[in-house]
Image (cartoon, rainbow, N blue to C red; front, top):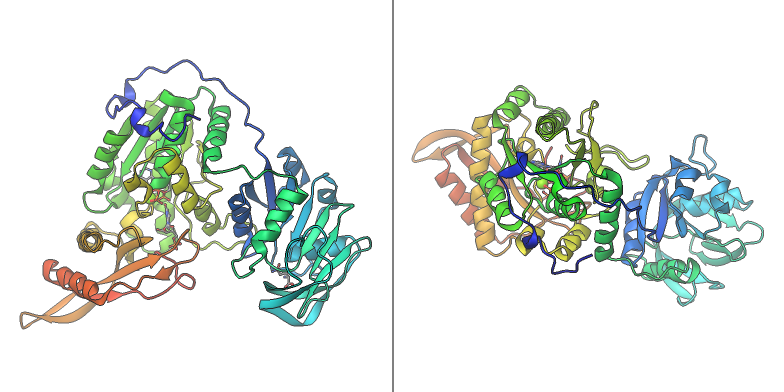
Length: 544
Ligand SMILES: Nc1ncnc2c1ncn2[C@@H]1O[C@H](COP(=O)(O)OP(=O)(O)OP(=O)(O)O)[C@@H](O)[C@H]1O
Ligand SMILES: O=c1[nH]c(=O)c2[nH+]cn([C@@H]3O[C@H](COP(=O)(O)O)[C@@H](O)[C@H]3O)c2[nH]1
Ligand SMILES: NC(=O)CC[C@H](N)C(=O)O
Ligand SMILES: [Mg+2]
């Protein structure tokens, strides 16, 4: 790695020579470095992704894999530890995900959490049964014998539970370390077999000693040195990218957002001139955003950029499409068609870089047993006949981790802290109806007013996102003594760290008034403004 000062400014700007530059000789293809990794197997728990994330916060690289990947895939990764997540099933129910006993024979420490512990207990001869009462939320934990896993934590502590099934006796050879209000056996370990289990959830913030227990597992039990950081993602991903693409040509879908900018920088570091970025202006961007993206890119990146004006073709494909998932799929497919055309002009680039994050994957139903909430255009919205090989260096990360990588790579602050903007753009904010040019223009103008006011109020960075939604609804108003029948604009502003959960932002009343009156006075078509006060869950951030 070239250190934090190797900023993007050192690359050579060339946004016009996309089709002219000469391919350089092949870069060295190095095998991915042996980064110490802990694998988390996902049994469908609500907090599975949080476990991997907390492990990374402890300074150890971790990825979440579906439980059905099988023991071979786990072995191939040579992890230094294995964690089994919670899950909705009952271990003794028909069809419940099972534990492959070989996973306990890999010669690495194993930690089961909740369902994961119940699986271990059942597999090794302990007693797991449905209890009369469940244990949901805060619970008191009594440590009977700290053993290795609970060493350094108090005899009485609180923890957070979410289960109905309960371990009534530990398997032979295991020590029961703790009990809780409703769990006779709330933690187990066998130092001899290097297998550990806890009924409570160490990954949630409501378990005060949760991070302590995870750290003990990683450091004292797995013997890991906790040296992983955003900086090591850079090094490691650069090596992985080189190994994946060799001397092939690569294109990167670049939106001007932080994810694709970071992905592009990583790939450029890895394979230099083999990369060309493609920005698709699909006519669903914010006001003047296309020009801003292109000029910001020219100022800060020295990677060739092709900008494609694709407004007409996207709007043509969206004609008559009103159902949210249908919209997302149409847009996802059209993005790929544009990328294919551009790739063909670049001696058939077969690799496509996308700034996909973990939250895009999980919402698209990419976790194990996880529901599809919405098909993100870059994951669930991809067409079936996709021929590109995807390069997604950020796929295991959350946005705040990507921001840290961006800062590490020297990405300008403005870009690091840019509010997210969804790939399908304003099309999924014209809700319940077709995204016509006329509606998109009204929405774009309303959004420009909102952005302007939010920035002037100094609130841009505090908010995760702030935007407008245009429902397919009109209401009656009275303006200048005349009856009007106009659009309603919804203001949506939320706070969040990673888009997995969000709260509606308490914008000052005076600011809201200013925004509403500007929208109604400046936009002929709008006669009413409302505020969305729904958190996530139950709402999602976008309306479609
Ligand atoms: N207009 C676009 N042109 C080209 N590629 C795009 C465009 N919009 C999205 N993409 C691709 O889809 C990916 C996912 O979009 P997404 O909006 O999640 O990420 P982003 O735009 O890079 O960052 P942010 O989430 O901060 O907006 C992008 O990283 C990029 O690869
Ligand atoms: O690139 C994207 N393609 C998509 O299809 C997409 N759908 C939602 N989003 C963004 O993801 C975050 C979570 O969104 P929701 O709470 O609406 O599910 C929020 O930041 C959304 O803006 C998308 N981004
Ligand atoms: N959170 C969990 O892993 C729950 C495990 C199991 N479904 C139970 O209710 O006990
Ligand atoms: Mg975006």
